Image 1: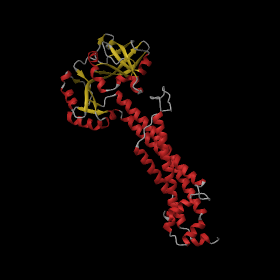
Image 2: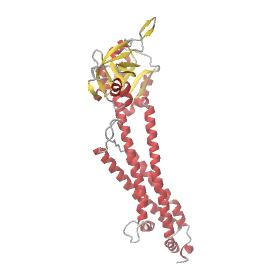
Image 3: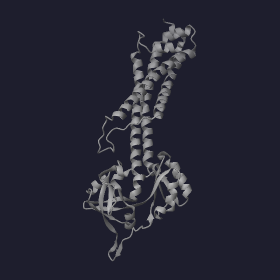
Image 4: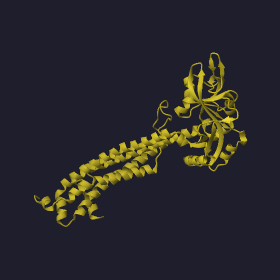
Length: 406
């Protein structure tokens, strides 16, 4: 063991030299609590983000191809040229046409503005996982059948088998009293719960052919929805598709469709990290105070060391090593504790959440290696910076003044 490291470890122990002193334990505990808190909270945030991504990917296509102006496209059925090109494109699992429109829906209990999507019943199950989120009824689009979100069903006061009246934003009849829009009765065949309030409260799914007829869009679609092999490479694939199809087509991936949400989530994680790092900064000030007091208490010993030949760099290293021992032990033990707690939360899911507030029932946790590395490095650097002032003061002590009255 190097001389400086031996002296540093001895300074951190109690008078008997068998265990760490109380003030050293407090300094280590500050770093321990800070590192553990940051890692546990970041793991929980990652878990929420992952659950959210799963819910979004289960309810929306990975890539959507439309015109820039969202104008209707002519659709040639199973032999449609664009549809065949999309299905053959590298990285695409399947593609299907869809219709997207905003309209009003009315029941005996109220009226709501909704987004209505016309989908191919045979292809939709290979594009999204919406069929697996049905809580009542079935994912079926027989004559006059629709599937609606659970929150929308509650708002309208309907259940499976009830009738809804949907207003068409296109077509209608002009009368002396004004324009009368087209309306049609639909039967609720299924109710889904995607885990996303926005989808549950505003989306209605209808069979593609029936919606084409209702919206006077026979032989037309809004665009094409795609499922891809690599969901996290969807952005790159969307850019390739936009280039391949050319103007006026564009492809938008699932991340771009929810850009505001994911931007807010990233900002939330960054702000949370910064706030929690303040805990480590408080621990760093504790280390500064502890080492400064140690320099004051060990003035005579430092003077003796310098009198017998210890150079200023050697004295500096003694207190730098002391700070690094505190930071190293606190960081490693905090990271280990954070890992154990996060692992237990993820494995046993013993923390429950109110289902009427959150979209999940148990606290989700996802540990990421980069978070552990970043937090440990940041904590170590902060504790290293905390040693600079006390080490400098110790190195500048005059040995004559230090031992004059001894």
